[in-house]
Length: 124
Image: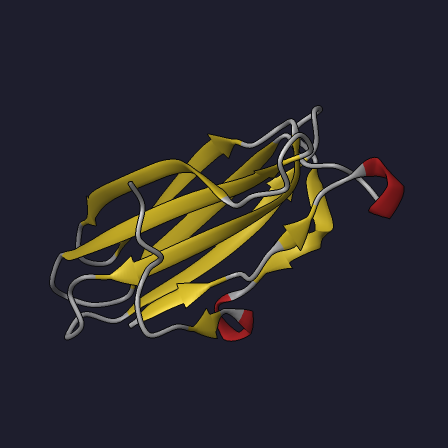
């Protein structure tokens, strides 16, 4: 089942702006999992949701993966995640990081806070 963080505002006027978003995936199963991560940005110039990253990768059994994606210059961003191995249990979380690599606490989205969606947004 795919999930979304929803749109996260990331401006200094609304707190600390993030320059990067970290996506953490924990495979708690005994089988490998394949996940898809899509990162969308909302640039100041257009305010239109724009795909920045679409990536798919494997998470070995009983392991984790932490990836960082550059999102600076956007007024907001959204992370969409899908586990393509539905019989394998995985947990996701995302964090914004400021320009110094510090976690932006108000941009933290834990697994239990992700919103289920019917499908990942189409990207062209």
